[in-house]
Length: 355
Image (cartoon, rainbow, N blue to C red):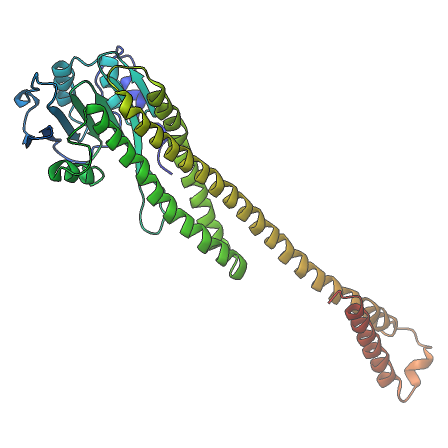
């Protein structure tokens, strides 16, 4: 199971706002990409240094800066200086174990999100990855722990001029990023749903420790997902209710749609958690029933042999005067009596449906 707290001891004794990366280093060098666009213009490039970045004063031109890799604190410091970001905000970006949230800082809005990666078999835990989002009147700053294809569809929409994204402001781009992250949860939940159905079939047909292990992995994944989605719901609700001038009234309805999706994701997670808890109870009940069946069979066998053991014990006593010992057919009679008793008891057990 991954660590829930990622080496927070590095910050011990440091002042608030100290830029210390808490998390894993996924690449040697951070990647900075910039897109500047409006309805008629599109400029796209990669930067080697933040100092090369120029944000035009023209508010109709939206600047989207995306950073892959948070381990380079110098880049965060330069971005903070360029956009006048609060040191505590930069500290939250570098802390990849941060809880999803939304903060209205006046001239810009800060949002922390979580996205997930899981292997195809889902026998490994889903791994949360932090996505930080800062947007103002004409800029959007997005930061991820590592490079991924998560936001590639948004880039393609901007390049091809599809939909409203080139016609609306930075708030709509922030919505598009948020919506993409939330929609990615549905893909993971679909895979988990398929795995739960497979577990249910195996639980009925082939119950065993392997199924139990799969259920435990799935339960743990649902806990990790719930831990990230529950506070995200609050963050999206705060965005939807926000009266910030940075969010146009026409964009509010899109944030409301994202909030509805978040509620749907949360309901699905709760449903899956209940299903997995029920499956675990079924598994434990099936184990108990199997043990009861085994004990019932052993008890019946022991009950059948009690009178047989008594008869064998009586005629196994070493008394000199036992009349039956001199009988010519005594041995066969005893065998006949014992077989009759055993068959009678078996028939009686079957009649009472104990067998």
